[in-house]
Image 1 (cartoon, rainbow, N blue to C red):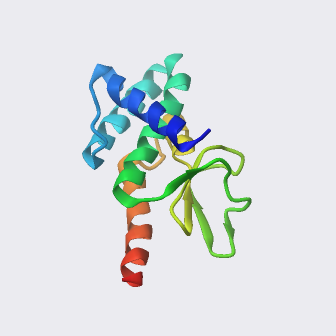
Image 2: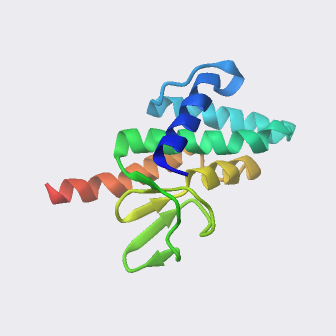
Length: 141
């Protein structure tokens, strides 16, 4: 899967959006993802599995567009290894978003949020990623 495939999937998801509303890749739009996940968890709908990959690509694209990074095919082999950190996923899932020293797995985060009401919200996930990336970038300036 290349960056173009992920972007296209995220764009397609944004056009259809939860409950048919168009999403705009803003940070505020992540609240709609959280609301849908809460509703979908309660209903346990069959469409949820198909929706997770699109939602994960969308969440990753929101992060990439606001924080930076690049999509990669493979995750880092360990949760923490040689200064590399991973936030929100399993080692065997593709794609991952590489934010230099932070590797994130947005599709796995969406899946975890759908499956567990106690899982941090997508909005908190974004905030955690941003806090981990932005200070490091500012230190380089």
